[in-house]
Picture 1 (cartoon, rainbow, N blue to C red):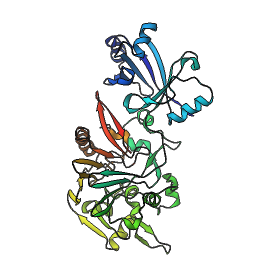
Picture 2 (picture 1 turned 30 degrees about the vertical axis):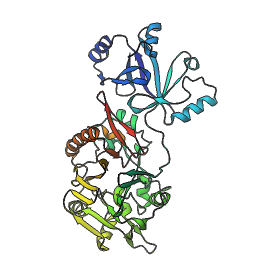
Picture 3 (picture 1 turned 135 degrees about the vertical axis):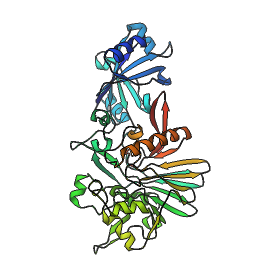
Picture 4 (picture 1 turned 60 degrees about the vertical axis):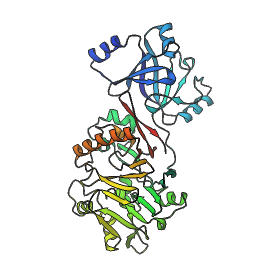
Length: 421
């Protein structure tokens, strides 16, 4: 069991006096308040650059914070340690006879799960354990009815990219709390294609990295092929031959490398033998005319064999691909990067691709350093996330290693993702 200091909880009986010290005297950034009804407490997070502080106000006279203030007055209430898997941590502690307040996790701030260890077990200190997001689990495909359509989230395994590049100008002390890096500064990412099934057949949005990457590049990117797209398709009773249409959000290797395969005799062939491939013409132009900034991400073996096989259908503008599925250009990440709207019976799901690659990227300013036009990303992202919150779009996060899809929520000025898959 590995635990990292997440924050220190401080009970306050006069918020304005507390803010005079933490915000005004120390100059710390105090986040908007968030109510946690289950604990009858109002939380004000104070960013310190590493572990945070939490100023805790009671919202009910019978709340634990109110009782603490009545007994001990304002001051230190608890310390919070972050763990990867809260249920596993509680089982580990129970096996060692550690006295717990909570035998099972409960809901905390920002959609987290929490549980408390009894002060008697920690020499008088109340210790909270926190799981910021659901525990890492196997990349398990899942089907979701969506009006007259069916959505099936798949996977093409795990890989790693530099954390600094994934979060751009965001300081490591902030992003590392959401996506812990390895000893080479790489963060764990997934590749999650999506199948949309309708009366017209099976449409696959993106198709992962595939298996053509040389050993050196596989090692650089930490590409894990233990479980990949063929496994995921088989798990839901499909195969590559069942795919009728493949749609590219853009042609980077981690999104479209799986579009082709190498035959035993070394030839490059379309991976989905019965499919047509729909690609935005301007994205094809950019991929076939790379420059120094994007050359490493556009690999000709991923897409040129498709044109040679005569299976590519180009299109020019935003609009419908098949009934219920339409594309919208975002730009930003690449000049022609696009997201995919899936709409049926009044419900909307959006495959966000690299506009919002992980749930950590729901913050407006958390824009990848990989983006060629970051201000374009920022402008589109701000408009889109506001729309997604207000209209309750289900968002598919292509690169999140844990959450395949969820709703972006906002409460008291703070955003979080409510996982669905």
